[in-house]
Image (cartoon, rainbow, N blue to C red; front, side, top):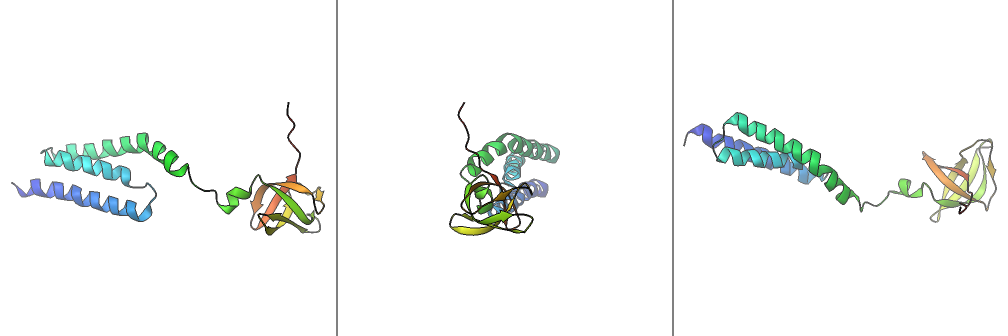
Length: 154
């Protein structure tokens, strides 16, 4: 067997190992698609395909895997992802513990047993202690809230 026929599969095998190692380290579905392409090119190399066909197979298989399987994998792998504290708070109803008044730069509300600094979404609104408000955003470490209005059924 000529040296070139031995080194091509070895190159694809090394590339496959590197891409899989990166995937294991990052756990972010970043290189797995290209590892699939390298595996397909390795198979073509073992069957005696020339280097340009191997490269073409690598590119085509990688792109096809990336386009058609990534959205499915992301959907199923990220579908059970827990919301972070930040994402989980937005949209919640919270109780005002200290009058929220943007002009006087004061106000606090309790979320999940923790007291947060709070500000009104609209500078003209003031919320008294004991009122329920809805969190619409978080700016730094401050809750941005608006008046809570019960949704009416039609």
